[in-house]
Image 1 (cartoon, rainbow, N blue to C red):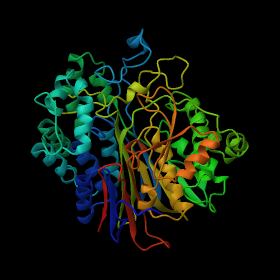
Image 2 (spheres, helix red, strand yellow; image 1 turned 180 degrees about the vertical axis):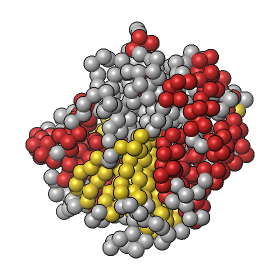
Image 3 (cartoon, rainbow, N blue to C red; image 1 turned 90 degrees about the horizontal axis):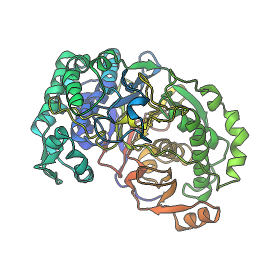
Image 4 (tube, one colour; image 1 turned 120 degrees about the vertical axis):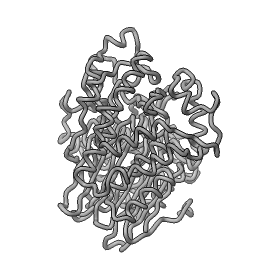
Length: 531
């Protein structure tokens, strides 16, 4: 096993792993003050909405997985936004797809802030004024632009120039910010303070006015009613069994079901005697991913608008019946529709035994690239994933949630949370989550080793004309040769390769260790810290 890029973090009283070091630090302070994992997750999400603006913001969506130790219950939160009530296919007549950028891409209500409110009301202990304080301070005083953010701003600078609100905040006199320069977002600081003082509904009842006015001035379609009527909701997690562990995910419209189906496929293959970087392991992963994506794309949608046979899809008999056929044909493929990949995952466990996985996103980097200058809120473009084909399961409809790439994974052992894990990265998410699970469960790695290990990526993202099969170059040369001989068109990607997702994971104490164990991804700018 290669030496990890950073040591695994061990601690006794709690652990935080996020995709940005300032967010990890802010959330850790909350745990030290006696706050719950939910408190710390809200603090981390708010902080990252300021310091990691291309990945996450209060203009985006969120899904939660929450284990409450006191009641010994596992619950999920769907904080995915709905399409505006007055928006229909007619608004996009003559187009093949919904635009990815601009005001007509911002057609779903941001759901994240309302999900914060539900989680806090049920499981929070510290006031929102405390939890949002670091974010407010960083927005007003400014933070250093990192190399990643500088690169993403440069990539999107032309789109920003088309939106006065974005250009005024994310460009420095019309040019991309350089690493080490200070990015200030005072309007966003004021909005966050309003939420902190007045509660999360303030965003939907008050902040919404300036957002809707700005969108309307730019040709957008969301209304005040869309914001007023939006509510995040509690939902039941879905699950499957893997090697004696119970794996949980958020139900549709989250693509969590795809992650569970990959595990079902692998559960019928003995990986225990294999090397963790063997061609046999990667072959099993690749074929499992193709099979699960093939099923996912036939059904994934808003369950309020279409019937999704969840029990049937998660029945191990389905994987058992079709596994051999897929393993025998490496050329069998499945063309994915490309999706956005900018998301962030927050993994937290506290001294009380609570565990939280929170995934929050703007969909694309900087979402729709539309920012209301009055509130400083950058709008997501999740709605651009809706299909304009009337017979597609994810066809655009008023009031509907789009199929979502967002997933939040939690693994249980003997009825208790064992590991909280997740990643950024669109199509990558079920693949990287499975990589972490198999590395820990099947090969006995710690969470940092599992995160560092070379990953496979099947599918495509924006700019790819067809599916690709990538494997990070840290895998042995002999593995590449063997996979190509088997018929896999595998290409080497540098290691660590950011498109493989930036994952975070926390393993909780148990018979395996009396300490919390945290890991963060070298493919991003995060860190895991405990106390």
